[in-house]
Length: 115
Length: 220
Image (tube, each protein chain N blue to C red):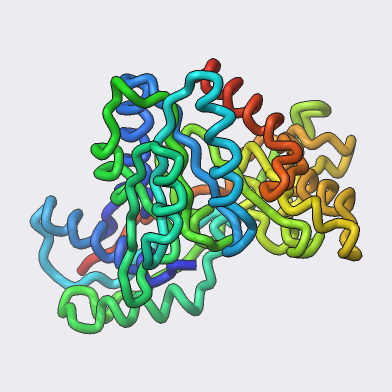
């Protein structure tokens, strides 16, 4: 949820980096990565991104690439590491609920490409 | 030209949440965030829980979050404790409380006169779970009129909480509700959840919630 806010935050981060490094030219591509736990709806995010960038000459043609980071857990009992597709936090090997989340909670702008 | 960034999209909220925790640690204040659907009984729970905590000498404050009205704050104010009401917008504002409204709300409480602050978040089982309020722990209230499958439908909410309070157990004789199934579903999402069965109306089970809160306060 809140894909519009997230889209605005993505745009703010890229604009801050452009200002900080005194970059000129148009942004061509932004690589955004979101862990599965954030349940980002790509269509909503693209919609919010388009709405946020349409009035910016530097950003309006930028492509937003959305990569989902899988939810990877490690069992504290049997040490098994696995990727889970559904939010049920029980080890498939030993049934323990003692699962540490190794990845899948992140949400960040990784990099962008500018002319 | 490729520019490396690696910046968290919610960094502003997360950074502020960290500052809230630091500020409260310095003042010796425990901050607990209570979330639930509308009508599960957050306010009623506080009305019964706070006097029990006060009996044990704890000084309480409440941050009330609602889209509009002062109704909840007025109920809590009757307990003679400081209350800060946050209205996110009179005509339909934010669906959750973020760190940016919690930090200024803390100014309402004298750190020398406060041991524990409850945030009563906006009634909503979806959005509040996504935003770190700077609390030391999250509590979810779910009632016997809501359906055993709710934890499976709202996994992020139940995953982020340390305590689940199952409310309205006094209604069980009138419902076809499987409370054991609800507990099982909670544990599928958050195996480490502490769970208590209560009735905020009759007061049943509230003493156990008081004990949990006091243990958290000592640990903090």
